[in-house]
Length: 387
Image (cartoon, rainbow, N blue to C red):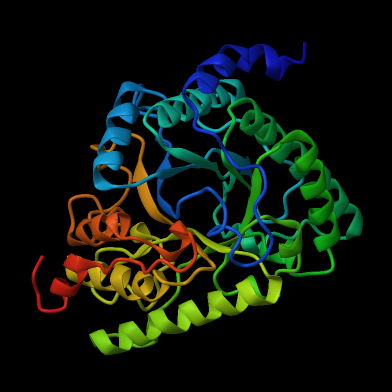
């Protein structure tokens, strides 16, 4: 019996007992999600505890189960789980599959989390990430010459196939084959990534996505290999500080148009695999900036809430839009040590009310076609200052 099967076999029955039926294919076309048995994705990303000094707070723990209960009360129906592998720098020669704990321990923790999520009625997306140890953005990695790119492709293939096997054993509903790998999927090296997608399909029978960065989605050439197009949707809603509500709303409409054009071009539904804004003044101008890297921050919960509303509201009646995952909380929802006070988490902030309404509204992707989505009732009140 392969080592991974020995490690994970105890979880197979557990997951199978509680898991709702999953789709392994979608009807063709941009409205495929709407025409499937799946409801629109009302998702929340739950990150692992990223510090080994804090035991019993990560995936699959009692605290994670309590967090899932809170997410359910909020109205979420999907969770995104984000295990990591490490690369040293942006010229990687390999990937360490260990992250804070051994790879085997992380696999077990992820499957416990999947089991908890399925038991609580959630569907699950698994998104294996790469952590750059020396800093930098994974979208700028460059192994070197063609031989170095070939070595890198073999290393990445081994990494993502390990997680594809976990996804298959855990009956995970949606697997992202990569995230923000701009220099790979928008260049002449893209065929090697497309080949990996084919290898993943031989290991995993569920739905596949890839998480483009918002500003390179138009140039990503492997989207035809996927079931649903993923976008990490950190769209700027305006280009200057001090934007008015009307300017933010126009920015949300621009983002919706860009996403719709992508759905039409590839004839596939679009999913926001991540979206988020921090709770600081002018958060919608450069939303991708990491909270800990910022200085002279002015806390502003209303700015975060307005950005959520501006981005999501144009999408509710779009039949090609499968839904979204908000970025993010961590497995222990009560742990406030993982990011700055002005960070991305919406928990306990005005943005949480926007999420609650978005989760409880009817989206076009809920289907069947022709039903009118419900309005964001409380969101209308936010425009006159009521929270």
